[in-house]
Amino acid sequence: MSFPTPDGAVQAVRGLSFDVERGRTLGIVGESGSGKSVSTQALMGLTRGAEVAGSALFEGRQLIGMPAEELRRLRGAEISMIFQDPLSSLHPLYTVGWQIVELIRIHEPFVGKAQARKRAAELLGLVGIPQPERRVDDYPHQFSGGMRQRAMIAMALALNPKLIIADEPTTALDATVQAQILDLMMRLQKEFDTALIMITHDLGVIADIADEVLVMYAGKPVERAGRRDLYYRPHHPYTVGLLESVPSTTGAKGRLKPVPGQPPSLLRPPSGCTFHPRCPYVMRQCRLEEPPLMGEPGHQSACWLPLDVVGLGPEAARRREEESS
Image (tube, rainbow, N blue to C red):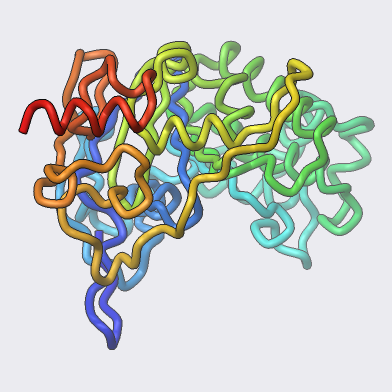
């Protein structure tokens, strides 16, 4: 994906590939601007002005270039999205129930208003909103932040979709409500056997909910592994940096280790590995050649470092490079 600008094309996403099966959760993590959100928005045709190339298959159907009318029928019915800010996603002038009813009747016109309203109240009750028969007539501003997010989840589940894309759905919520929302999503996913793509910059969220994790940096995938492998055997230095910058929950003392520097400009990304200007392990090869995703089928990393070097530290990597040259 790229976006044309007066200064040139912003290379927002490059070389991205992933898959997710029913009943499974793929977590996509990375800093702001890494391409997490726009890559999934492109699947839904929500990136106006973007130049999108490649292939995106949903049950054998090609999403990239799909006619707008066919894509509209797919949205909400088979693929749903939960956005970061429900207040901007819900229309302020219509009741929450009316908006769920409209969604149901657009995709299922044979369903009557009374039946759709009953289903809307049932959905609000399913996601834990108290007195759903009454709250169905409330406006979005009458809901708390956590309740609005629950209402968005209810809308996402209204037509029992096969895939839900959740774009940082808990970012604006406090820790207690965040835990409740994540528990709710995991419970409903098991109940409906839905595939879930969870986009976040919070590694704690991924630790709770994901089966597999894809780490993105500067518009590219840099590591993909099962959740346990990623947390206990990270390979890419960027992944290691993200994990080291998370506060400890075990009582361990010491300063956090932030990833130094800033992400590169996607107008003019650096040569070789895009992370090399910030990488403590950088070698000559990193500056010259762009590494592909490589490794075992279940754990791949876009890094030239041997697997056994990352755990030893940057100095060991430099010594090995000197010895090999």
